[in-house]
Length: 99
Image (tube, rainbow, N blue to C red; front, side, top):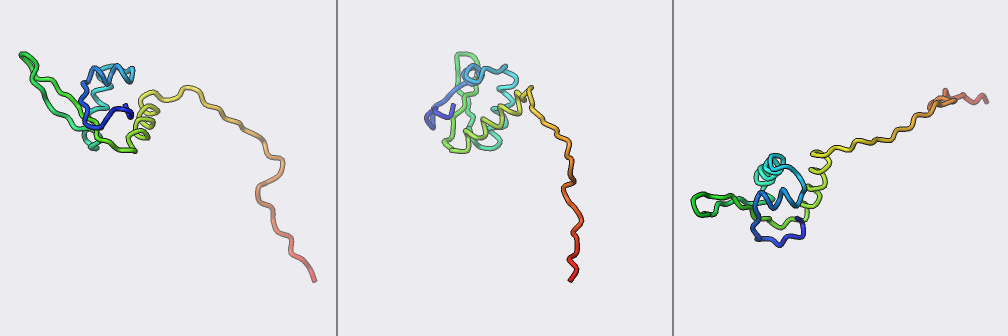
């Protein structure tokens, strides 16, 4: 989506397909993006109904936002931790030098 030209309209279905997410999650994302003004929403008339279309507003922070949103929506399932036992304490008392 970050490659999409500024001012190009897209629909909820297109965004959902591009992100490979369900329509419900995609709708939540678009609502958030509209609130933070990364995209604009407008309506177009199609035969007997109105459809919401969205317009991407060019912003270099949009890519970072998408990366953060992916981690929020699909949290990682694998974590790596390492625990070691220390033999010596982190802090030791200071020995005063006698003169």
